[in-house]
Length: 468
Image (tube, rainbow, N blue to C red; front, side, top):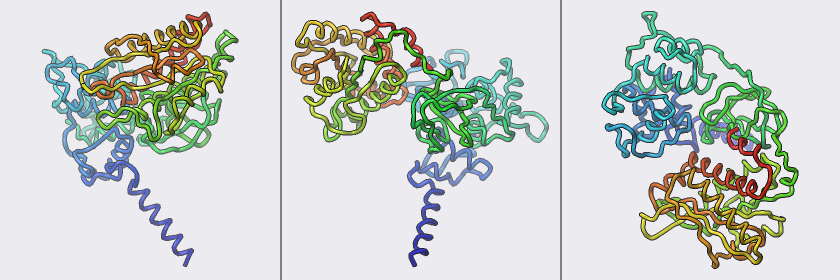
């Protein structure tokens, strides 16, 4: 009886897994997608690259529009999809694809038409799709439609039609566009085997996830140990398609390097410096809340990204919290002393009763000795400058505070950054965006380096690590 129950449980688990239990509803399969495109559409849906008009309707037989194509490609490449004003008179900030359209145009994947028009509702032909894909995935195609078609057919992404041509003028259905895009992303879907793992790379960190697609939405296929050697093929946005032994999948390029040994700064003093990162709030303290977004979640995600950058350097790095836990103000300040901290960076998001309040600011405190006072102000200044460059928000300047315990009770140079206003819709969109969190994490990383450079340390070789 126990054996029968176990078997029933296993069968149920398999059924739930096949049905996409725990995944977005669309990843379980749309009812209107033909079998020839089901695997590819479901693959894109799992990664939140493709979606439909509902959880079960994809609109497979509808002709794909330029706006939809820009959104699909933009999501695949992790472009900034934040809805915003564009360069085109026919694409307003309210258009669902406005952010992806502008980002794709900035990347020269798309271009507009005379009169400043994008024609977002214009149907896409097979030939236009080939050019889009060639540009998006950086295929050499000579700038011609025929060259783009050859680039796709050579890679097994597309093939000709019944009359022996590429069918460049034929309009393209959403299901077919999804098939071509999935094949461009993942060679496992291609018509011919084209895996070219010609580049050798190494993992910068341990316990590094290998995923089935180019985003954290995709499932795990394996893990890499620190300094593990892999063979790399093509890049999809910020992700690289790699092979490690028998495992093939995607790894975030942020955590891979081109050299067998990590780059090291020439200044031996850096290994004695400990950076304390303090994501604010946590646990039962959500911090500020705006548009359903909690400050504690935003600052933790950003802090973890800064942590990963600093782990590639000779610096020591410690976090007051790396999970959703509550820590008192006094314990945060004491953490720096207990861990022999050198500088302390507290990460927060601002809030106000008025939704119009906006901008970036950095707070510091005159500590108990003049050295820390001057250094705290210097650290705040460097962080503020970099944050302004990153998000281009209003400069609210440096603010000297005497009433914030996390700064007041600190024994090391300390600064508290307010990334933006969680209660301002535009800034809230940046705060919740993985793309903009990464941009800000790099800014904070650069700000810390700028501080040490101003203090006379040799950190020049560390700046490029954020772009590796």
